[in-house]
Length: 158
Image 1 (cartoon, one colour):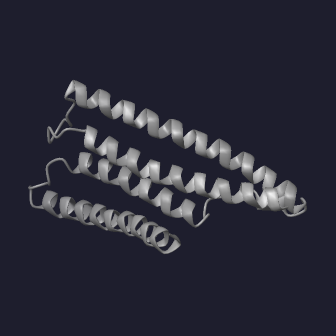
Image 2 (tube, rainbow, N blue to C red):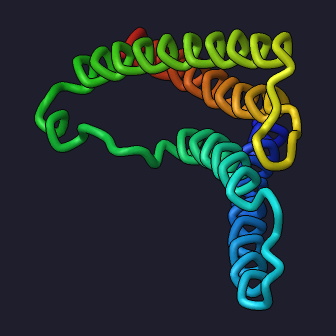
């Protein structure tokens, strides 16, 4: 299970990095195209969509490595059990926030799908990108819940 989990986490990081590369290439291609009077249509839309997906995958990867800003400097003098309790509270709040975020993204995507909303330039449907961001945030939610249980076990064991 852990090996599969690690491979999945590496995949989210790779997806985020690959998308960032694609963003850079698209932006450079558009700049070069503009200089010859042939910009790439929909560049602004595509960059926005890809940036959202890259951010979502990057958040999951960073959370899996617990690389987000932490309040360790406040917790260094706190006993281990109290620190674990504080971590449990933080992870409960974080997981709750991400569950709500995923729920609202799904709701928003369903609304956009039902209305047939499309992008202004490319006239492409927007709901798949909203669902993709929701999926990336769902991965982060699963990671948070896993880490929450790990901290709960640490709190129980003392």
